[in-house]
Amino acid sequence: MRRQLWMGLALAGLLSANAWAQVACERGALELRLLCATYRWDGPVVSAYFRTVDAAAYPAFAGLTVAAWGGVLAGQLARPAAERITLSAAATTALVFGLKAVIQRDRPFKAWEDITPRGDPPTSYAFPSGHAALAFALATAWSLEVPRVYVVGPAYFWASSVAIGRVWKGVHYPTDVLIGAALGVGVAWIVHRYWL
Image: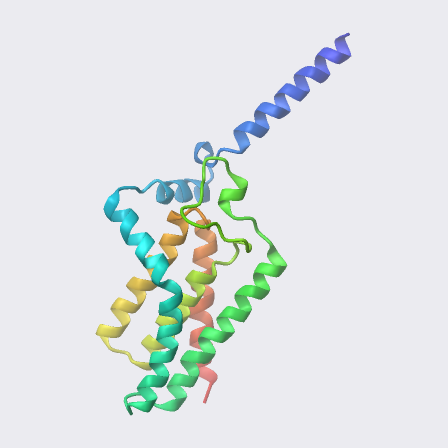
């Protein structure tokens, strides 16, 4: 009888600990506090801004690469610059898909009951953030090729908005977007430095 009582108490303890562990915004870890603080930003302006930035991300990724080749055709950008921008985007994308396949980190909405994705939930893994990596790769590539304040400022503002928006949507942890951003910057810098 005593053994059954202890087993019942142990089972109740495990179940209650498991239920508590499923709520991200009551945990003390820094990453979860940052996730919840960003995820809880709400209001019509914030919501409209991040939804718009997220919806425009894929067209912007393609458009920024096409714009480089348009610049070449218009005589405003050298061909090697367009090659470096394109290679930065392609290499970043390949690296992100490879890391996602190896690391296989679940997205926040799959791990925590109090995080629900805003919009259609992605089916791929979370780490690193492909949106953040590609946004920062393109921002860096363009900034290195056209080092003007009217390019650099808006490019990094846009890239930061894309990255923060992914956390706001509940589809990435802060470290997913930070590592993704660093990866994008690093790839673009290496391509710019070594692609002759």
